[in-house]
Image (tube, rainbow, N blue to C red):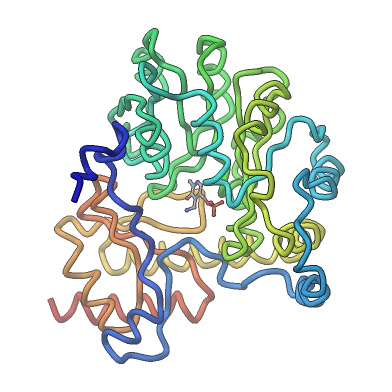
Length: 368
Ligand code: PMP
């Protein structure tokens, strides 16, 4: 047998497979526990808009046909909502797909991207899978240090990833800090502004709306998703907004039918159901407050978060606590791979789920 490791493209061998949150069914099988609470993947605890079900049923009759590869209706809907013209929009099978498209267009051997310590794990994956170099800037107060990022730019730098807010830290940057940074970045360096959690953060004073900046900064690519506040993670749909020239290049590498017809149809309805998004954002804000207070009563601190999750500091190896929580039927996320072995990330759930988590945690900490 050939040594396939040697045959693999440079960069690929350095990667390890993405570790998703533990599926509920897996825990059920392993420990025989039922009534499991999964707070591990930053999903919307309310689920999707209840209005999509009928439309998805109707779509079943159309499943023999290919989807609209141009996502015409979706792009028009997004234009109506945000004022962004369709030629700036690129759709993806989740925003991860869009991140990969930008990476494939601009990165390769001899180029590098810059990310922050604790940055979302897909950025190194996108970078290394195409043989590009990766520069990691130490975090400042768990967040992205944009001044140090600027200073780290070299002739090889082709891309900078900024998650606002970042997963798993929940840290965010203000409009002033962002534009001061963008003003100084060379115009041939592509800046990805990942706004996966935009809807949750939008109410925070000074938090920027990246879509309003793409005109001013042609090298800026903003990514959004329907996986979070819109509750459609299972359907995989996201998009980017960029300069039309960049969108055109991304379109060249995009698989023609990368977003399926169910997702396109559901997205149209989900985007129209602002009430559902408002409810989701409200329940998140309440849950965040409840968890912060309850954690503080347990003597635990969390990194202030603009997302739908909180990253809790245990001040010691958090893996035993993670394991003990699993035995209580509560799945959270260990984030040692993000350089935070003493922290666990918990997604904000429904009031019941949040209470279950706190009860389980209390029990686990008392037993320790
Ligand atoms: N960016 C960030 C910061 C995320 O946390 C996630 C989801 N975990 C994504 C992008 C990708 O989400 P999706 O591919 O579901 O749109």
